[in-house]
Image 1 (tube, rainbow, N blue to C red):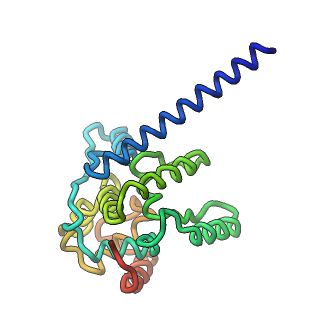
Image 2 (image 1 turned 90 degrees about the vertical axis):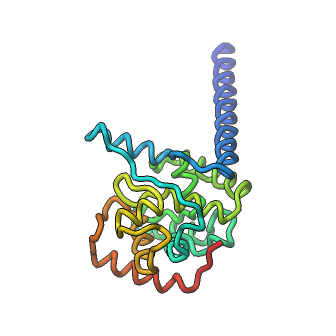
Image 3 (image 1 turned 180 degrees about the vertical axis):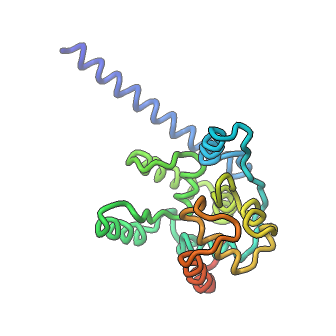
Length: 231
């Protein structure tokens, strides 16, 4: 019995050490990305792996562009669509989380996450897309790291460059070229709002595609763009 007790504690201790080391690794990654641009992300690697199961030569569309080369319309559209309180919160929109919880309870399933731009960035950079409870806890921890080490402009720059905008399409530049044949800097208000409307389900849309939902959502975002600010 004593042997089993000691073995259990050793296993627990090793697990805690491993968890602590993992947090330091995440922290080191976040610190590195404060001044360096990521060549790939967890979501990108998962995407290219999935695509190569059907086509071994599949490649992602991903071109990094600096913040100054991204249309202000897209910055406002994404904030309006995904996280209106982004310039002011500390990484978590507690009111949004409460509303998402209440909506999920009414629906009886997870239909809304209430995630901020910082939380989505944490997930895209370092985590998987599953909905396990431990992943949400880890996402929260990485969100705190990002908010502590990065300013809002850098967070938005990273997000706009690594967000998924289609099957194998990542970042504002690739998205603008793929959907509209223009650069990220040249996006019009309507084009920017339409890209922002695609974010919750980016693989559902192909270039030139129109749906009643997408048109309504684009119009809503355009109206909200006028009252949000970008860093």
